Image: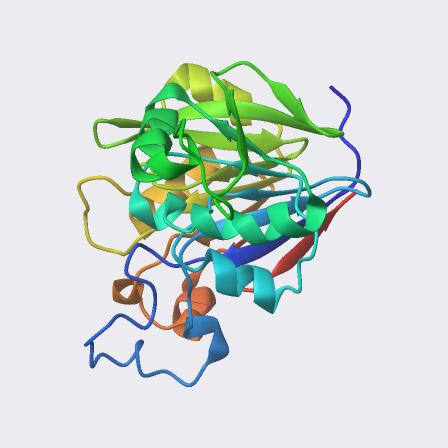
Length: 259
């Protein structure tokens, strides 16, 4: 599928607790650098005619207000953890102004969680003001959101299957610590890859900084960005200075233009 020019906005680049983390006295959480202020991870993908968001975490409402988003066509979900789906109720505002359902794309595991956590949106007894959702169950097969082609990539978050997504030459993967070889083939040829890098120390279900750098190098991706970052990784400016020239830490508000 041909992909139109895309604009990618990083709505959030933090891990589940965000940065700063509640109650923490570390130097990262007390940094004055705006790039050390990280909401929960999410991106917005836009063509000339279509706008979608990947994940609606707890910060979704503020992310939409901060970016002054008045129209949204769809939400695409990676997996059912709360830091990636808890903000879905705020879709109601888009329902109200657009007078239509929101298109939701999720695999069966995430769909089950959405139906459980937002049961009132799927109840036979409905009341005014609930989220109006049109669920589309996705697998590993490519699909279209408006004119934006989406290629799911199945990765592993410890024992949980998670979906990453490729949009044309741009690949976005969060919450992973393992990617099987057949799924890596879907990533190869990307011009830009975004990958989670939680911290420098080993973690049960996330890539470390070293592991993320190695995978981007092995896949021969020209430009890499790291996301889903915790305060344990260090200050943005200090970590950025240590990275290879073709790899960068993503930060909230970063915008990439893909032709």
